[in-house]
Image (cartoon, protein in one colour):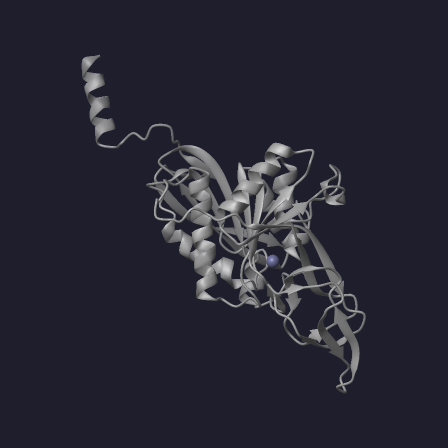
Length: 352
Ligand SMILES: [Zn+2]
């Protein structure tokens, strides 16, 4: 008896026993406490196949599971490169709980430089959740992420930026619904901890995708519908891998981990200042196809009726002046020349 106790004591003192944290199983494979492990998950549909790169960090002590996706849109490079940096900056030896990080959710979109879509089946991964095991390759990717990341997480973060043609103002966002006040409020606090000047509220009241029998469509909406606090990062413009914005995403995720008490407080940071809350978004659409000339950039304030750009035909004649539909801040404006009828030209956020 005494002898057993003695050996137990030696084990504890030498750090061989980690109290509280157990092995974590990802897709049936073990990730031991205090380690990180990388997985290349084959997703196959007939002739189409891809390898989904996922990193799993298992900490030293018991704690929540945070699921993170990058590269749901493969041309959105800043979150993808920030995720590469997080491989080194999330240290499993100081972590409580587990982080599941999907490095590139749409690997073929990334490698083939394809905005919005997976070139294998022409589908937008962020419109097919929860996905299907019987579907096309994009639907199978969504299904894998739903089952192995979202369903296993307590909290969820999906990371995006302005895609190839999108001049976007950086912000964090959270899903909200008055029927889920605790989950919504936790999401709000998570979004604030990501440390952006603006936080957009995704108010899901009355949205069809929130109905139980309807598909969630969006990656983080799937998490929210399952009762998990869900946030998004939108940071970066035109897909450009801007080093400053990459660092901003990385530090935001580390702040979130501190807020969730999964990483110890670093104590170096300034207290986060209160962000501006954006409660409504208005969409300005093109009435013609042609060439768009923006006269504003993302982040500029506009008043209703103010000109924000114009469209010409292919002979240089102006066929449509484009005006702001509301007072607010430009969250997104098309930043490259092509434009087609009914496409969104700009998104204007109403600041509270
Ligand atoms: Zn995106």
